[in-house]
Amino acid sequence: MKEIEKGSANVYADLGMTDAGEMLVKAQLATKIAEIIKHRRMTQVQAAELLGMPQPKLSNMLRGRFHGISEAKMLECLTKLGRDVQIVIKTASRLRKTGHVSVLSA
Picture 1 (cartoon, rainbow, N blue to C red):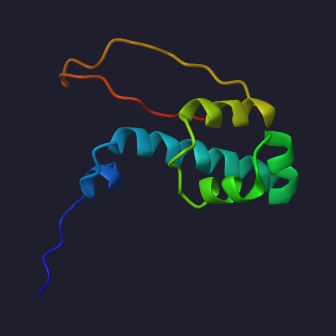
Picture 2 (cartoon, rainbow, N blue to C red; picture 1 turned 45 degrees about the vertical axis):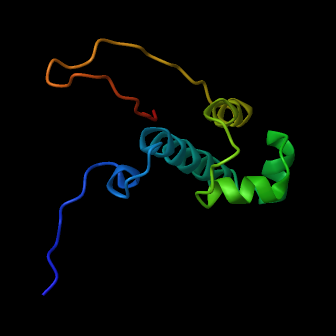
């Protein structure tokens, strides 16, 4: 019988990736970008043109292949898709020794 282990909120950390925090943020940003493109009923070719990137690079990003795509580029994509992006910096919870980065969508 296999033992089931409860994972954390970050699958990348569970997999032991050293850049787990960054990968989780990129996954959240890519998910939002994909939602907007789908909502607008855009093809990947149309979206890539609007975002100023080759369609294969957009396709890779939307499929979770983020290496070579910076968080800054993903934030730029969101603004080109008509979204305002706010970065809020606040004091970390007393329960944690370090802060964390999260993506919230309104």
